[in-house]
Length: 455
Image 1: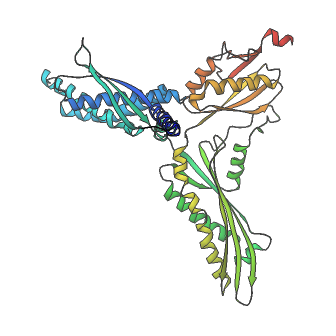
Image 2 (image 1 turned 30 degrees about the horizontal axis):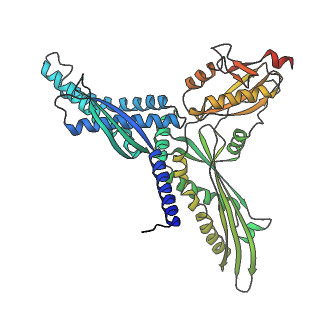
Image 3 (image 1 turned 60 degrees about the horizontal axis):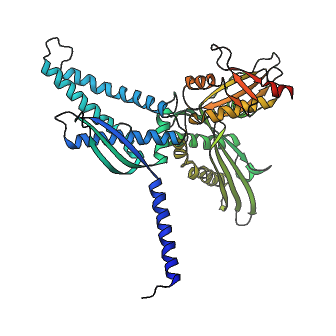
């Protein structure tokens, strides 16, 4: 039977596509290795579950490293939380087996140690829901040591959910607030035109807005429990403070030469709801008015100036029939209250998805001759601090120093360690930096190479 050239080409193309897909699928998996020290009375299922759990941890470590995250910091935080939880189990076991009793027998001590080991291994498997990070896996090999038969080994291929990994990483590395924000401040802005409030049938503008804000405040409290400590209606003074906090690159020295005070609303969010109402037409005979409603909802992270949620509320044209002014204002208030609720329903999910606990510190760069040294330092820090999601920005420029703001995730010790490693590093072979005094870890000196200085 003759096979056409066209058919052969088609088969080759299909085979190539299949091979590429298979290779891509294999590339999504990471090889994990685990070790488990078994005891004579351990069941096979107990041993296997311990091996798989340890291999999962190895895969998570490798994936964190590949993603530029700090696996060591994550496991330190994770293990701290585990030990805190396990201590409660340990205390109950100590009471049950009378550990403090001087008359405790050797058999009782052995039973206590065995039981505590089993509890620790079982709790380690469930704690933190690490298994949810691995969406699928296949065991490659299970073996035991020829020299030490109780030592078992496993190799398996596992696929990682990046979304689940991010969630669990920032849950434990999220900083001192444990993944929660201290406050969410919300403010409103109404644009209704010159004669707008009268057109809306509103007699008292302040009462109208206050009633709506109270209703939104209660709604936010109900929906954001567990994500923020408290919901705060932003008055004029708070709004000024928030605007000061978010002002990028404009924080200048005061007349005395000192920097302006640190921000007063750290680890907070600012929810801004803007509403536009425009009258389209009015029919006096039918006692009806037609309005166009539109708006926007924006949520900003005060610590990082990043937009957490931003959405436009599409225009909506509605005609209202009324007999009394109060009827019109009540109908409009009811609709206006519902306007931001749809986008706000996504706010909790958005907040849980972003890294919380960002810290902000300021560095002082001295002995610089141009802004090139400042930008060189910022580039070096960004490259070195990827695992801490480190970001930099210039906050002020003076004759003797440049103030650089650093946003990062982790502990101050991580940033100090990173700064100490600047010594010996250069940016494009031109600029180098060092911390001259350990007692002032955020004070940095810039130097230029002789060749650059001569030029």
